[in-house]
Image (cartoon, rainbow, N blue to C red; front, top):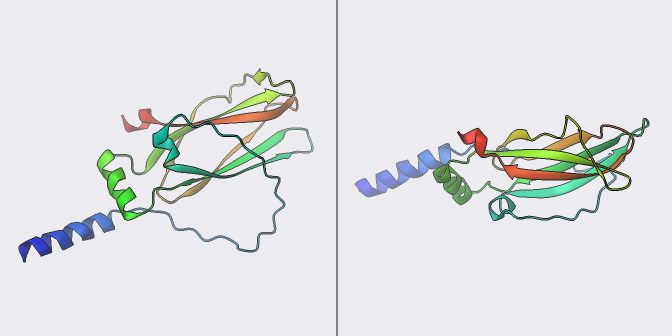
Length: 153
């Protein structure tokens, strides 16, 4: 009997510690989107199983600057994912991202904004990473996402 009570209390504590994000979205979207076909290179299996790139949108503004929005979702939302994240100490998930801008010839444009930006992503959360090109000559971009180990220290 004591074992059953301990198991029930342990389960209540674990379920109570979950801090996932619940979202509500407009089913009938009225926005005009300009989706980007993406190619993806994933060298980090740890990151690959946590974040999903939902969509990538871009739009050129009237002043010629390129505006980019990348929507990502943290896939860690179920009980077992929460439990393993809790044991590994990565709940919520700490990432860093960086946009790199390329000119029409594919040459990288160095800017002060090309730095790693830290971000916390809660389990089940959908976030949007946004950036605007530094000048009208930038016509393309790359986005790098990594686990932010510095946030844990």
